[in-house]
Length: 160
Image (cartoon, rainbow, N blue to C red; front, side):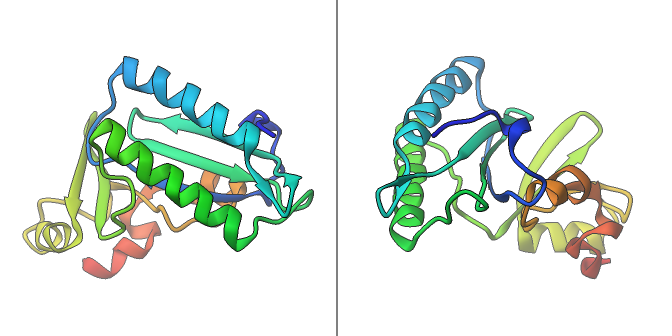
């Protein structure tokens, strides 16, 4: 069951899928329709899952799941990953590669391989103050407070 992201409790589990490029307005509209359709039908052991999504900064697809009402099962997680893979193919984007870092440089969003980000840190092309996206956050509350932070406040700190 698709609900509004804002209605999810702070403890709702989140998954963040960073995109390798900025999405166009038309792509976002299409993605929104596709995500709504998927979440309307998403179930675990035959029970509807209370889930929501949002697209942030034209770059991130974020899924939230209220596990207080129903936990996701292995099969339901597999179904969602398959859905994300379908989006990757249909939109010619990368969403599942976790070995990349997304960060801000002014108003510009950069998406770089982890090794390149490490080199940029060493070369001082990025600093501890660089805003990074910590896609390892676990729940809605962490998304709101620990997702978009200076590198010094994230796991990225180890590269400086």
